[in-house]
Length: 59
Image (cartoon, rainbow, N blue to C red; front, side, top):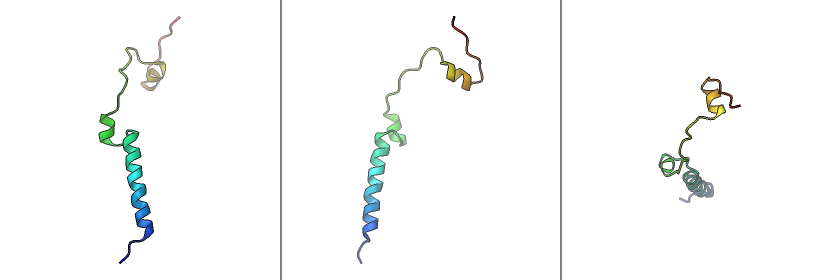
């Protein structure tokens, strides 16, 4: 019994998608290898807005 060409193409594409996912940190294992910047000392205005707090004015 012969394998359909569509199945081989789908397998190749699935392998490529897995590689891209690992490259861009879309898998749990890849997320652990990401180098994240250290958190800032003060949250920015947008983070305060999302938290429901009003930002302090710096004049």
